[in-house]
Length: 444
Image (tube, rainbow, N blue to C red):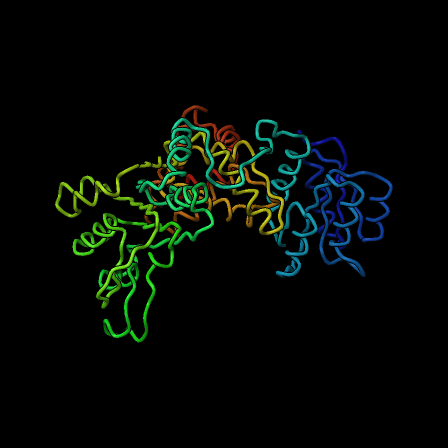
């Protein structure tokens, strides 16, 4: 049911103004149409309009001036701008000014109607079931979660961090292994010392020894100067050996000796020297299985596995997704000086995803949504579109994300007896968006 308050239409082209007025009148709206910015300013000064529709290029002033006046007169006013001569600068100015929607002429009348209906939904709170959500008192770091698995991890961290015990962090890519390592360091007696991360998987096996233990000038081809190794650089601090499962057998023995003796011998040196570092290692591989296969030394496994912290995949702690989403929302709002909000339907869809890339994938998706979501409102439609875009960019996640979306749509269609309008409403998307998705998925 259209809102009862009149809409203000500002359009200097007589035929366009007449067409839009007639169309909206037939759809049940009351329209007050004017042809100039001056008349629009007078209307806005005299009355409050919940929705204003204005062309950009009008007379000596523009629709951007109308936008500003409408927002000053009524901050909750939704302004829909139209233009046949849009530019990046114009669109950016409209976005910064708080325009609700920007339509490029020529457009389908249904596109205008859809924009008006979206504006109505926000104004009338037709979205109480899809309200904007906010969470106060978020943690200062992204080590977030109140699930049972995360509480157990916090307990372990609080016990092991103050000690010098070697820690092995396991978990899938993107679960936050380095974050946990940094928390161990920052809550230890080595806090004032350096924290040095090393990605063992990205360093050639032949160079890893020199990288960690150091090397003397002339000790190998290209060694034109003495080189201080990571272990010496991190003296009195913490070294984080990420992807420890990637190191080869020859270096595994050398690392084992270091863990036993706490001494380093730079490549080309005759003498060893002691260093005082704590080792925190991490891997996304099953080291125990590698031991059984003869690919990883059992004695090194025992040395590393003094305290093991297994990090759960994001899909195994879905109740933490709202907290993580709001943390990243705040982070990127502050970084880009924006004020995006996320709705209940948007959060619900996020919670239902498989997240093969775990927390890192969620973080990148929220950053994309903060920057690109229209009107700074992240609802289910915005999330679904971003998931499809990101899955098309990453072939490793494409199939699972598309399958999840397909299953969700089929489930809702079945529950609504194939009523497309009701299904679209439940999914939080426009009916035409649902038809487009059905066509793309080959669903009759």
